[in-house]
Structure formats: structure tokens, C-alpha cells
Length: 393
Image 1 (tube, rainbow, N blue to C red):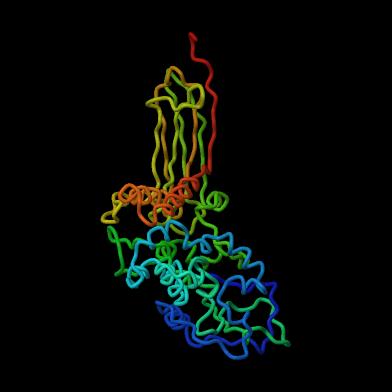
Image 2: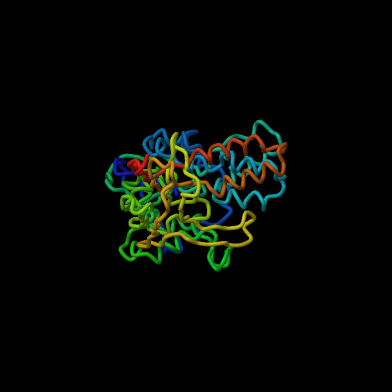
């Protein structure tokens, strides 16, 4: 969902055209998949106006382009995806589109991807740039975007202006890639991607807060989510009751609440959040037998054949870890933490693919993807409570 018209943009009213029909009608036509080729641009377009490359958009929409480059949308065709796609025959369009329908949805991106898979060096690199501006803003060489915030009544705008579509400010625009159909792939009666439905059932939907309210504040093109520690901390509340030593036992309590996330925390099958309390010995080592933890995640089989458990937190729900464990004789401290692994499922997937075919064409890419997935983990909360020396020591 790449929206690149902000409050800083001044648009001539003569360049604005309203999208016809209802929002649902507009979206059903706009998000026909696969997205059709753009065709030949208008003769009046300059080379820059006709380009589908994000850098061309960045000539005028610099802030949006700079934001986008830091986003996961820009890296949607990273080594984890390409490490698998290089094994797909370029004529197997159906298998390719299982990924590219959201990761690189333009027909022009499909064409450049197929050329790469055929070993051609002149196919272009548009597919490598992931979810590009044009995927959400261009159809048949016509530009679309949200209503301007500060219109101007004179002047001329590049590419003959754009079509104003309020759908760009509605969560339904995002659902095309963040919500599987009810008759689509599901486990335990829930679509594999179910974010929009989770939001619909929340108080945030009833209050009129859209996906864009949190993920595109002020129309920024950052789309921060669980990979961003600051964004994650804003969506939850962590309450820790300090440990108490009584009669040789240590008691503590850690509560994680989904206090500000507009869908399940976490959404999707990929992340894992772990609430942990354990005792620590010299050198920062885990004292054996003292770890207690609960996992907040949607656990599925590696082959996606079954849902094993779903311990995620709906908006307002909480997970409580009660700790009552004998003090380890070598324990020097109690560690209380909440750890987030945004790419936990992918880490397991990449490992299994590499174990099955360590010499495959995509092995190098998959090793890079595995490294990236492991490095994405972080703690959103961690406290170290030093223990006093036990009696007799």
C-alpha cells in the first residue's frame, strides 16, 4: 500500500479527477489480479513521467521515496523470496504468482523476473524492488492517490495529474494482501493471513481507526510493524512484579497486554513472542532448571498442514507468567524479559530448505535470509534483579 501524496504537495484542481463508483466497486476494479500491463504511456509523457521505477517517483515525491526505501515493502523480494523463486521454472507462472501477487505484483515485474530466471541480463530489475509505488498507484498509466490535503487552483501537474480515490485512506485497500479470502488457505478455520478480519472485530474498527492510522501516520510511507521495536512497544503494555525470595523460593510475575495493537498480537504465523523469567549465574549463564516461559504466537506445522496452537493476544487480551521456582544455589540474579522474533517461522523454513538441498541454486540467498531472520530478534522488555547472597555463604 504505497501512498505518495502528502500534506506538503500542492496540486492544481484541474489535474484532479474523482474515481467513479462506490469504494467497493473501485477496489474490485483496481485490485484485479494479476495486475494488467500498463501498456504504452501517453505520447505527452516524458521518460521520467512514463517510468515505473520508484526512483523516478522520488524525483518529486522525495520524502515518500526515502521512507519507502527503509520499509519492508521495498525489500519484499529479498533473499528469502528469491532464494525460493530461483528454483521455479520461468514458465510456471502459477507458482511464481503465489508469491509475486503481493511481493512484486506488476506485470512488468513478472516479465523482468522471468527474464532473470531464464538467465537474461537485460530484463531489468523492477521485480527486485518489491512492492513499488506503481503497484498501488498506477493502472494503465493513470496515477491514483488519496485526496490532496492542500490543493492549489492553478498550474500543471506531471502525468496529467491523478485520480482522487478515498479508498487509499481505508483499510480495505490494504486487505488485498493482508487478508486471505474466507475460501482461501486456512488452518483451524482461520485464514493463514487474517489481519483485516482481526481488526474488523476490534474496538479500533468501531472507532474508525484504519490500518493507515497506525502504519501510515501523516501519510508516511514507513509501514512499521513488528520488525520495529519502537512500534511494537507502542502496541503492548508490560507489567512486571519484582521477584521476592521467600523460604528458598523465588516468586515473580510478568504480564504482557495487547493494549494498543489493532489486530491480534502478533498477527500472521511468522513472529514469535516469548515471555520469560529465569535465574542467572556467574557470566550471565542460565541457571539450569529455572527457566519458565510462555509463548505468544500462532504455531503451525512447518509444511503449513496444521495449526498446532494459537496463543496470540486479541486486542485487550493479556498473557500472564507466574513464577515460583526454588532458588538455584549459584543464582546471582533474576532476569525478566519479553523477546520478539519477527521472523521465527521463516528461520525454521530456511533451515529446513538448506538442510534438504544445501547445494541448490538458491542456497546462498537462503543463507543470507536465515542470517537476516535471526538478526531481526530483539527484546522489548528486560530487567535484571540482583539477588542477595543466600544465608550461609
